[in-house]
Image 1: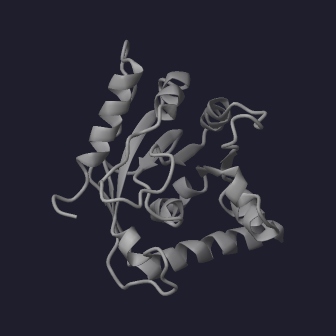
Image 2: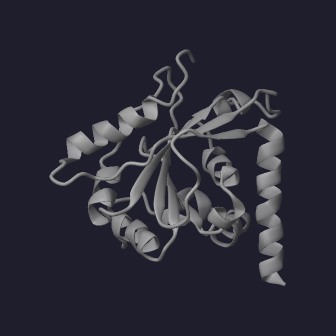
Length: 210
């Protein structure tokens, strides 16, 4: 019974996300593919990972896990239920001094188990005017730990306008997710080069004017 309720809850979240944003998914870099992959996206709203997750086909969605902050999702019972039971999130302790697990090892273990991940390399929500904040180095260290895994850029357009900070009701605007061409860490590629390449691949999916 609990599994049925979990699936109904996940379906409700997907339906709500689609109705709220009128979202459409554009697979510009190729068709959806099962197996361990890392979907990495720009980050402007708390709803980002739910929207990426909702845009995946159901069979992929069931094996795709968002990476999120433990401090936020462990605050109360409801959030813990959503994170652990509905999304099967990989929760990362962002307090370097207190954490007991290596975040990269934790994410790599999920990939090695056959799951895909949703990550946000900017590390925090972008509330400024820049299209994209600098990437943290974690995306490189994850690629180095799992060099055979593909990284798929996903540009989220308009979600920050649909759910602007400080508003209770959403603004009715179409939200589009563009999935780009998958890339991998190249042999001999260093941290700075890989971080720049992944960031540029994501920026290339952004609309000409924002």
